[in-house]
Length: 68
Image (cartoon, one colour):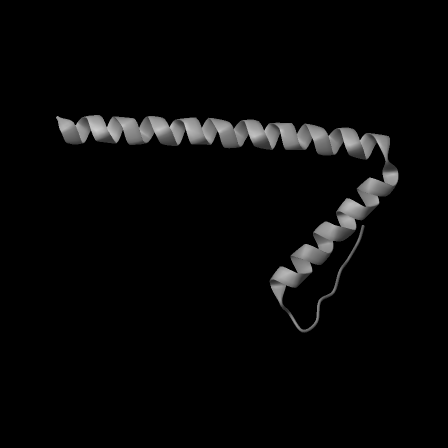
């Protein structure tokens, strides 16, 4: 019985953490969307920063980027 109760507590804690993370993601998306709509330069900088971050993580000697 104690094991079952501990498992329920652990699952509830995980559920709360997940809810918090989802709320944080939602708020962050809304803030980014608002900032981008107000400032086109911020959008350009965000895209550039995301591309650079992705390219750094790939750690390839050569990369080709195709834009449509």
